[in-house]
Structure formats: C-alpha cells, structure tokens
Length: 82
Image 1 (spheres, rainbow, N blue to C red):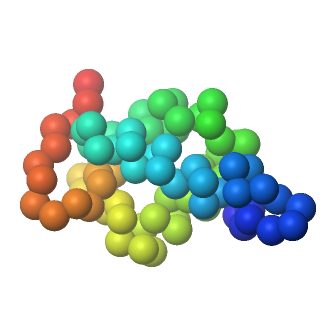
Image 2: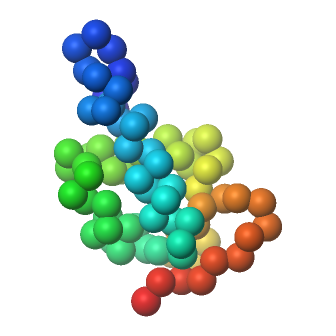
C-alpha cells in the first residue's frame, strides 16, 4: 500500500483511491469481480485493489454479505447491481 510521502504525492497514494471504491459501492452492492471491473482503470493493479479492500474492511467502511461487498453507511439499503 502506498502512503503519501515526500516521494509519493497524495494523488498517487492508495489512500486517495479509497473514495473511488466507496463511491462505486454507494450506488449498489457488487461482487469483488464486478467492483474491480468498475475501478480497475484507477488502480495500479489487483494487489492495490486487494490492499484497499483490506484497509476499508478493517476501518469498517465496507462489509461482505452473501458474496457481495457493500458500503457501510448507517441503515441505508442498497440493491445489488446487475
């Protein structure tokens, strides 16, 4: 995971890419494969995507239920994208 530093600008850090995942999940729940398909052009690769999912899960911003990932935001209900 890339953290902002003197050599890594914030825009290139992994932290700057967390909102990309959360914004995609705000609309509807997705499987990891569907989510990666939507955000892969903003990621440097699958490893960064997995690192971001791990971090967001540890911060309790996302959760997994029945194979779909969803954004944890109060009691809002979201549909599964098809």
